Length: 290
Image (cartoon, rainbow, N blue to C red; front, side):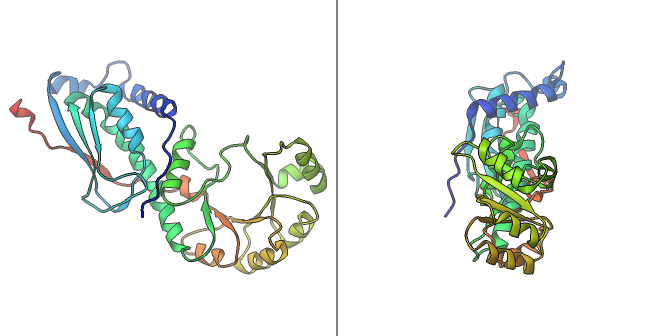
């Protein structure tokens, strides 16, 4: 069954799409389309998958076409978070021919990028199927696109780590150095955190983990540990905090990491290294007949 994913806030989508269109149109607009296509021509087009993958970003694509033609008809055939096969139709677009052509690249750029992230995320999720582990993203996102890329992770069956620096405390090695010790860092974080803010501490060794477990924290990030070390770490934590594995995670290693018993695995590659999913837009209307 396809999971229903909550959509993105419309003001965020509209602002991003308008900025992308402004970048593409520059000072002169779409000089190719304006020179070759009649202002009164209408067309129907389909967006189709050229390779297999998980779809994400339809809301952004529709907003791109609608920004140039408010009356455009955008019919979704394959919903976000749904697997598509090569050649399958994702959406149909009907409206002003010029608007469809001019918005095409912005629409496909967003959809290709987000669908690529959703597709890679689904591969990780499928690889750890049968374990209780959750696949989560990181803050290693494209500047300006974080909300969209994290949405794509959810479309792929993953979950989101903290959104930014503002919604959770994550104490890393440099914070500990700057605070002059682990205890100082944790105590200061506990004093500053509101009752809704969780605290996580990163550790590189089992010795560091032992020190952290002397304090009350919500989660512990086990960085670059082997599956054997992770298994020992999970035993030491014994349910007192969420156990998160990170670092050195790939499709070839994620299953062994999951089987160590950690609660979640955070993977930067979901957003910084996902290949774009190949999608295309083709007219199905013969404009010469108009």
